[in-house]
Amino acid sequence: MSGYTVRTLMEADWPSVRTIYQQGIESNIATFQNDCPAWREWDAAHIKACRLVIGENETVLGWAALTAVSSRCVYAGVAEVSVYIDAGAQGKGVGTRLLTELVHASESAGFWTLQSGILRDNVASIRLHEKCGFRMVGYRERIGQDRFGAWRDTVLMERRSPLARYGQDRSAAQAERDDPKEGT
Image (cartoon, rainbow, N blue to C red):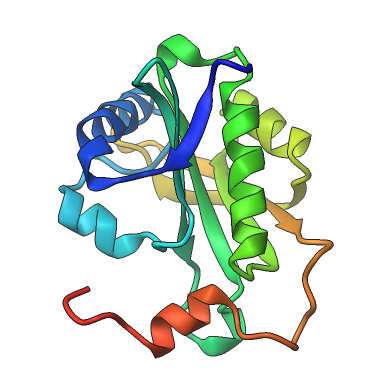
């Protein structure tokens, strides 16, 4: 895995990120999304502090990002994980490296809980999350419909940071909500 580079996801990465996201949509086991959003919509929905891509020789092999679970301040340190790996790079340790880096970035940004709702059929993603310290906390039966109209179950997984100092510091997510940048 030494040939892989993890770095901040930039707008210039969007064509590759979009392609990988579209693969996930088409797999019908990665998301309930039916269509890939435009950059502006994706950018507005994801926390700026924790957006990563993993690549090899300038080729993006996967991406990971966080989404706020709530605008309420008590949940400022809780975020939803998205992690997508190019179909040709799956099973090669790319996901483990990327999710591990996302966990470190989230802890540095003050997040104390990461959660992930994974379609129950996506065994590879469930195993990846377990490998990176997530645990299953439950499942949600018939929570949403896939792109073909079938009702699907999700597994709810979470990872609590052992580094968090609960209630002592304002997280980066809360700071971003309290001090929004003009034009974002």
